[in-house]
Image (cartoon, rainbow, N blue to C red; front, side, top):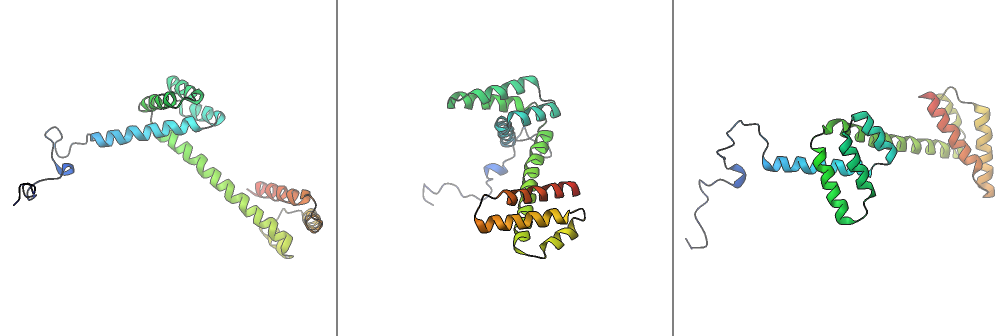
Length: 190
């Protein structure tokens, strides 16, 4: 055994496996690493609140009853443009976030994020219907089967105008109007 090999690793524990005398087995106290990760998560949540637009933030603050000091700190962070000052303010927001229950805030942010994704998916579905209506003659029947309240004469007229616009390469007024009608139809059906 050379002097650089060190003692054999048999019987030695890794740092993560060491038993500390202060933390007895079965003790539910979080480790320093867990506490630090939680602090970083709260700071990230605070940064997400700073990034929200003012209207949504006001709605969230009222809904979750955020402390006034935290609201003031977040509003102040929005106005700071200097990198170092903004970083310090975000750390302060993170510190204030430690005294707040993050679950309602996270639920609200997730709901908004999913709502945006659902809105986008619905928009794409309506765009596909519009394109289908312009290309496939039987698409209007399929749409009417899905939406029984459909005004067939109105849609036939808009489809004909949109096709004519496309052939003449003129501005897409009827094309856009067709989308608005589809959107209204989907909203009325919901």
